[in-house]
Figure 1 (tube, rainbow, N blue to C red):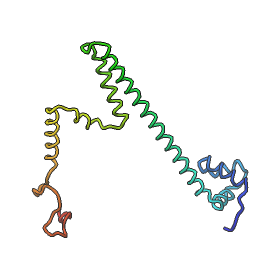
Figure 2: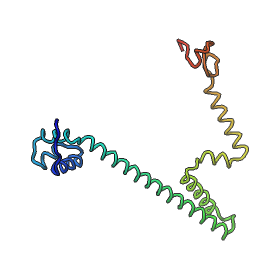
Figure 3: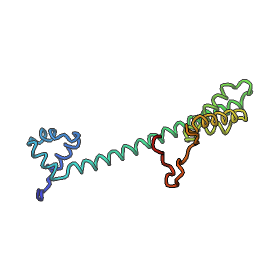
Figure 4: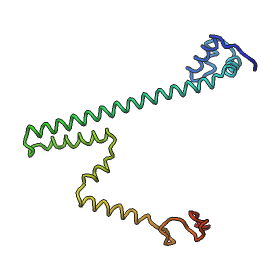
Length: 175
């Protein structure tokens, strides 16, 4: 549509339009201009592209803030878990272990909180610390679950079907 010179008024109208969630009527009201004028400015000065860029920048900043909040919360949780664990250990040092059920629980909870805050998977650590009977029971459970899902009605335990090497991985018609 030709070469149009953008003025301070156009820039301010853009800011109003963007701040009002791209509402053309907000610009019309504030600047006492017709809707068609605002639509022309929007096209001439690339308001949609500029707003998309600002939206992307805003979203990126918000994402960084959210990550920073999560990291701070995770660190706070790690410190709380560490403090609970230390207090439980301190109790054990100062008292007989036979009367320290609460201290032992504090250690356990503290370690769990620290582990979660560090992002360590609880399942793996439970297996790591499990006794032989628990490991055998878990292995039997995994084998049973795997056996239930293995094979199909053709007796084939899975994998490519068909005799032609070109059919590898293809399902024959009718399956």
